Image 1 (cartoon, helix red, strand yellow):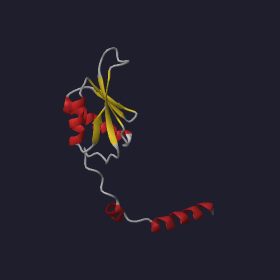
Image 2: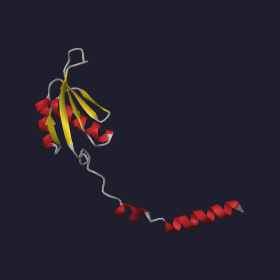
Image 3: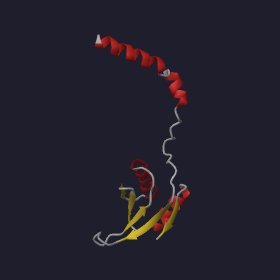
Image 4: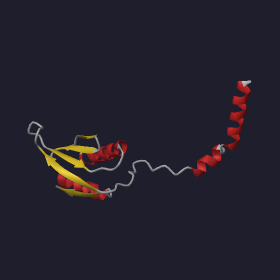
Length: 116
């Protein structure tokens, strides 16, 4: 008796569900590949050498994007500059003193940034 009640509930739910075709038209269009969501606020570009055994690093902070989007920006930035780096905890680290290059790249990509 309980299984019939469960099947009845399932059937009534199926009636209220939209068809697959309707669902495709109502979904928001996904972002194009390589496109980054909008960033609010300004990014800070900082040069650091302390605690890195004398090696220099350019760090970009202030992202309000999720970690996946930050990693995508970092990947594109590293490919463009031809340098190593990483994206962790909402920050991007680029090896070497590349402040001007990073600023040029970020403004070209539509981000607001400043060198500190």
